[in-house]
Image (tube, rainbow, N blue to C red; front, side, top):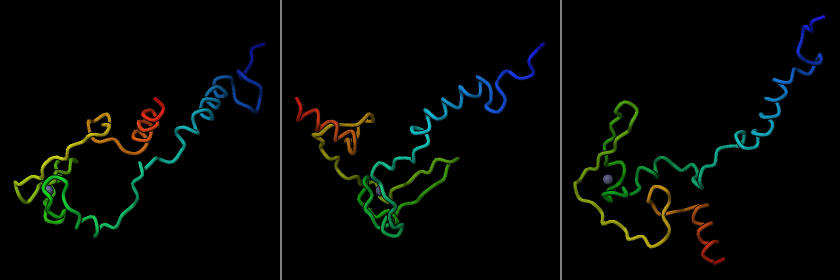
Length: 112
Ligand SMILES: [Zn+2]
């Protein structure tokens, strides 16, 4: 007699049980809330008065163009702030490291 189902009744088959186990194993990783990297929601009006990191003028003086989903900010002046010298560790993009990466760098520096 051929079996109608590939499993015991009521608890799925080996295939679905495998993916249930995979789901339960991965849920703590992928089900966790997104890390904000230490950034918090800030007041929009306050953000518009902040100085631009490129030219130093307030953000509200800039123009924004939405080019096919890429928002391009244009500074009101061609003057640029001098680049800050960085002596600390850099992240994978060559920017000054912060957050967990900086913590790990400092732990490694103090350990060895
Ligand atoms: Zn600017």
